Image 1 (cartoon, rainbow, N blue to C red):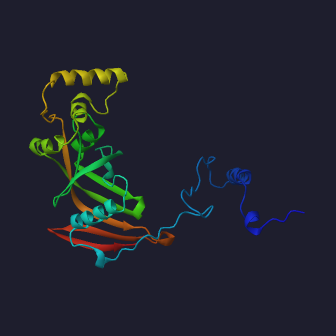
Image 2: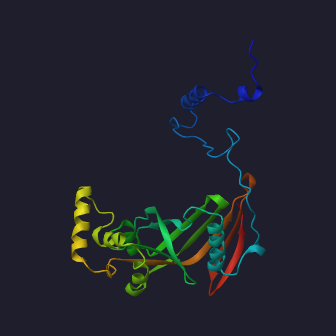
Image 3: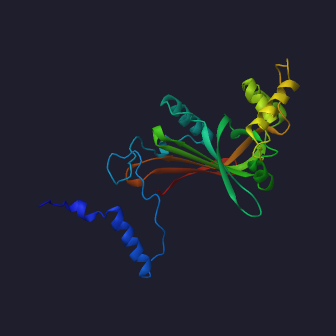
Length: 257
């Protein structure tokens, strides 16, 4: 006779879970649909349990008075830890008056005392329409290798053409041509249509090494009003510290996880 461990008996099978779900709905309980994904535990070595974070701690005494200096420190530590493309960041914007939020992954290309800079098309992209109606944005960095997260919220401002040209010149020729050729986020009939646009721009700048930055393309600086530094900890009891702009100074608070 096969013995059933207590842990096995306590854990319903997928079929039993489905039956319980159906009974809950039929008995007046919460109405739900069959879940396609439920409580994933990617990376965990403990089946059925979420992965635990334990690579570091964060205390107020570890923090620089300036959030941009603190970010610079963490960014360098991310590079040293071989974090894959630590400049990768989710840029979130929202349109007004409907308040719809959209997000996309971009690269942070510059940091100075004023803020964080990303580059894009500011004429046809969805983010450009959001920014036009609501000049606010949020950034979220996630560095898995260090179990760290940084969030930034603030007002935005466009960089001048001269400032944008400096970064634009560092891009490979194909990327500079592509910025001219692609009306970002607009409907495209075919890949061939895009490649024809690229050929047309190549012809326009044939034999010309210096290509001017497109007037509709350039940098956007997020001027931080709030910056949060997050260090993963065991049992989801993470260390969180928020910088808030108060006049010309920064207030630092520890937040509950």
